[in-house]
Image (cartoon, rainbow over all chains, first blue to last red; front, side, top):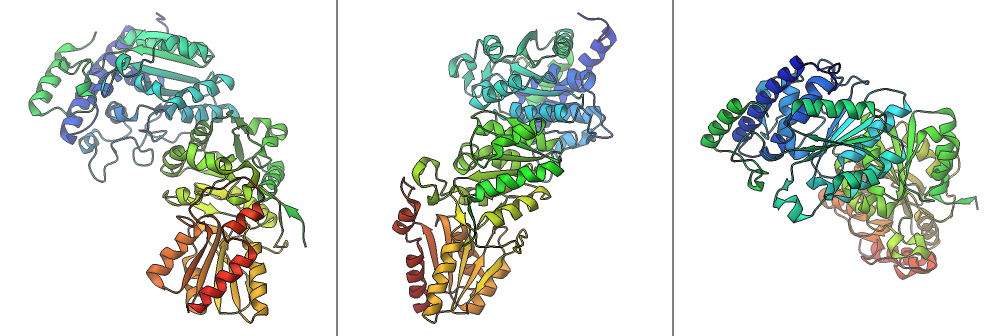
Length: 281
Length: 312
């Protein structure tokens, strides 16, 4: 662990932030009566680390040309991103109550023209890495030193386009591109290993010319260290974040039924209580 | 007779020429000899992004480049642009409303030899159904160059439909192109109107001259922008001539003919006829023979015009 890159205080601050974001995810999906809690909860530490420590961004100037970019390729997990953007100051947290409501900035899948702070509209799986490749190429072309981050699901790696983009990223030597795979092992109809096995992911990404960093995706220190390692690689790098779908809510964990279901009132109260008590790993 | 050149080659050559003085656009290629833009890499290597034989990745990568403020040209065969990469065009270029120009080549029956797999007969129907998309199609090499020039300053999703084989020029350098504006290359009278988009304009003009000798006055409209359609020009043509024919190197379902029919149906129903591909796939062979088999040759167009006028 590199103590110069983050302090114990940073870790504490980020862990607290993650608790807030988990609570937001539950309450906004409850309020919307629809959404995807499982894959949002598994990505909380990754997104929190990015938006509250790693990324060079300015909420007052979301269109800043030199900002770091983030593409949520697994766009259905947008509640985690919406919460992070709101809590980081891109828009009022009151907006979180409007998820999926007609006229809201918070569409069911992210819309870059409606929600401030979004760098790409996503939702159709398998496309995000390609768009991130375009952003990283643009940085090279214009000699800008921003980083591009893209978060994929492990089930999403079943899409062929992911591998077209993976090939292109290493062919073009995109050392300014970091992909993160939220390896929660569960997709809508069951375990990824049963639906369509994607492992061994590390071997696959290496075979496509990527550096691979593996990490516990829920331990904030490990996540921060993984990002630090990836940034210092100076080579296109993928972080395989080993996570638990529905992390932080006992009855949602590792259960595909919570891929795309909303908690009712009772479930919400229980979930938020658990998140408050559970704190961190 | 003027020079002959394929619209795709004229477009590519012109864009290469423009790139000598302007550096505010980039080109994405997917390993095709589609319109001469494979040469872009030789002259402007830093502004060319090759993705290999991977059209979906090309379009989504183009979207990422455009999201960072770049004007992007992505060139490939129209079958791949409109179908292999259909969803990337729809969701990551049109829904995002990004500044990506998609250059689709090898369209219609004119493809000839390569056959059905490589001849796009449905690309306009597909592209036309995407909100935010603009569709243009030049009638000859002169128009292709003018469209190349105009496209550089166009902002938003744009589809440029180009043909594979050389065609004789119908225009001279006085031709002007304006997005969304129909032009009238021939006004022989008010007996009927032929609305054409693309290289079949030459056949329409020849058919109109045959009909002129028979005392039939045809107005020919070049609908170089298929979307947004110049509705006023369509309505005016229907009101002034009372009979409208569309001519396109595309399936008669969903393309220019459908677009014009929609306007006529809503605003000014008149006797109407669509010349185009009759819901059949293309095949290998001499394009002129294939055109004849689909009633898209000059004589068939003239014959269809006589039948149409008889319905007035």
